[in-house]
Image: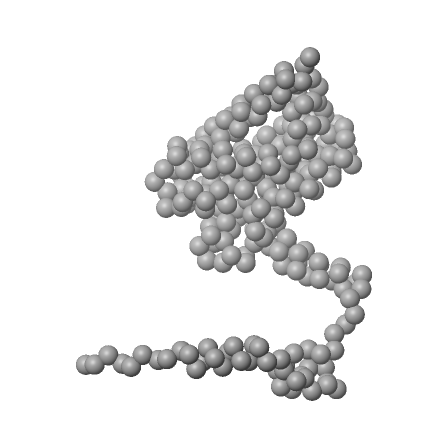
Length: 250
């Protein structure tokens, strides 16, 4: 059977280019043009328009779905984001930047939430001044620990795991911010122990969901993975801050 004659795309492309290059001669008088369907009568841009657009595109669609999805089903949500629907949740860097901004703002409102002294003062100051960068570095540490130590046979590549790590740490930072607010109104150092507990539980659950290893061994493996990555990150950051102090000392 002979091969079918290939279709020449040039007439179609020429028509499309001509349509794009030639503007529509809109018929005025109606809200929509009867030729092209474009809206001709638009509402003026004012303060209410900005608030409405922010509310609809960010608070309703993006932030709400991301917040709920990462809070209750972190591993499943990120896996669906990577494999099926890239519009399911907010982009990872934008989300962690928003969470970092919220974290810094809350700590400026409640400056007593971080009890720091001596070396820890420098550590806290560096963290507050470079929150987004620090979280991204920690995400890289978690990604390396996942990909090259605990989950070497995973089907996900390095960058897909990095996206998961960014989402995970962004959500943990958001929980830490909420605990900062709670610590301001409650007596005792609830923020430190609550933050530590939330990190361990949430990260373990997220790793188990993401890699679909719901067993005792899977939970233990996920917990050890997050603890090792946190140890590597904190050790490196502590050495950096310590040597920074040594360089500043006359």
